[in-house]
Image (cartoon, rainbow, N blue to C red; front, side):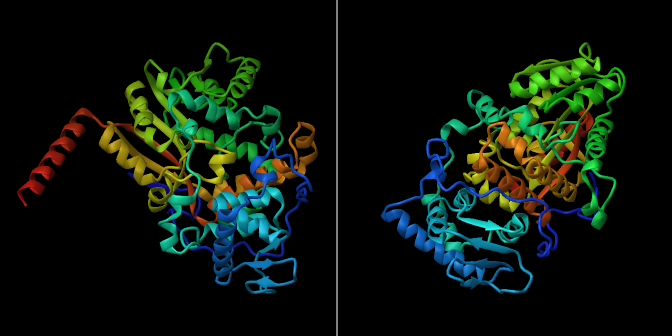
Length: 470
């Protein structure tokens, strides 16, 4: 297997220095309303109360205050007190309602951190910079003995969000069926909702602008199609349609495309775009679970869809791909990834992202993908491109665009709480890529040959025999 990098970031872990403070973001964050409708936002309109909440809040407040003292962060309180090193250029977190912040943090852990931001309990001049500080040390913020107890008191994944075939449609709908018009407020003309691949690298990446984004999204798609060997006459299966840009570009090469999605909103707009481009005869877009796909395909492509599968179903996902992949076919997927140790620590956790953005989602590690495909399928990873820094800048451009079009978002019926939620999501995600906590990979796979498969089986059997004789 070979590994390339779209930038100097080639590994999952790298040295981290927080984004320098002092460069204000180019937008104004809407304040949370003084009164929040608890019928719409139950966890935002109501602060946790009662003896349990009070005790948990005091513990959370003590942990937070202790942690801040050793973080490159400045926390300002209403009484004028400051935690951390003031005047050192660190990101600034401004507390408005510290008691409510502590109560939410105690009740929901990191879910409470996001909810307290949505509620307006705290603000930041540069939210991404603040979140980078937390993301870089997420495994060490809470003392280890308390980490082992968190499963006893933190919220758990609702059964209705497990990615069974009965639940998956609902999980996908809660995010992707919000409104095509909403996504159009911050996506470029390609309507592509995944990491772009810019020609720039290193420090030059931080200078990319909105006008660069559409071409970089198409470059990302073209690379995947190239790696999957998509040319005239290729039968392509796309798992996860998005809004149709990949299907359009594959059809332009002369391929026939069968694309499946569980989002009715995406299906509607993608079909419209395909028809307007004149490729209705070459592209079919069905509302279907990937597990139900039949047929044989020369190429299978899937962009940032594995994250919505659920870790219990990753083997099913790859077995499905193996089943429909024609002899000699190739697979090209784009996947957000996380370090394997963090995957093991968090794969059953219920987080703010699950509750508000992506129910049922779990981000895989490269190791998990390799182990599952090697042990449970005949697929093998042949090549990887790590491009996490490109996602950080893609998210920056989305963030700036979304905030610049705040009036359009409100006109669509999305209130200030939603806008603060969406901003927290974009900044939270960007911080993950900026710090290396998250990465994104283009991964190429194919089927191991019959001869190679037999050799692997013999090697495995010999290894098992050797272990048995020791």
